[in-house]
Image 1 (cartoon, rainbow, N blue to C red):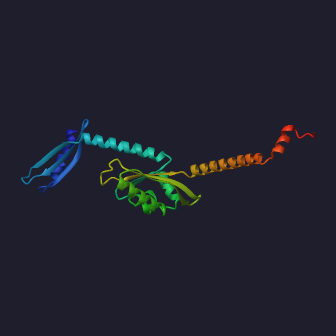
Image 2: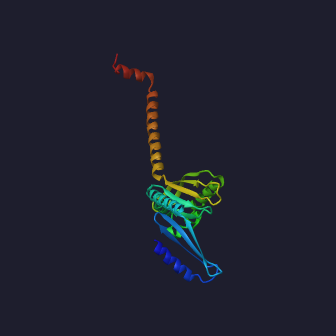
Amino acid sequence: NYADLADELALATARLVRSGEEDQWVWVRGKRTFEVMVSARSDGHFWVLFEDVTDSVIAEEILLNARRYLERVISHIPLGVIVLNSQLRISSMNPQSRALIHRLGGDLDLVDAIGEKIERAVPAPGGVHWHALCQSALRSGTREELARQVYDALEEGSCVLSVLATPSVEAQDPAAGIVLIVEDVTDKVQLEDQLVEAETVSYTHLRDHETGRNDVCPRQREKKKGGGGVG
């Protein structure tokens, strides 16, 4: 390690020929990580500074691993998740959200979608609705929901989506953004409609049956009770 450091220092001092010029690199010594900076002085000598950045490197690695884990989780949940920055431009989105946008008629791939505003990435009227929802959540600092909205879909004819806009944890930070969660509730709504229809039909049959019983005159009911014999 020291030999590598000596080689890097020799190369740096050879490259730095003017006063004020700088060079820097990362040097690892055992379990510690240092950032080394070499600066040329006006007298022909050099400043050599060592900064121990081990803790910050570990913290960055932890954050990176956590982000990778969250991205794996988000990519497998049955919800569309879109992360927007403070300008409501897309910074990330999972495969489910791209599939939902495609069903609505959007044709942007992931590369084109990153940096795009949500109102342009999602076909109207969905994009306009979602953009307004995110603006409201960003202003209030609280969750805002757009429940069970019907949109035109390419294959099914229509689909029903519920959209939840949640400000990021740093809600008071002007640079904070929005996490947009989109759920396809089409099947759930259709099932609920079918249950309501079935309950309505059952109630109608029951009511008609009760009404038919009440329409029978007392003499007919007596005949039914007495067997209808001739006296």
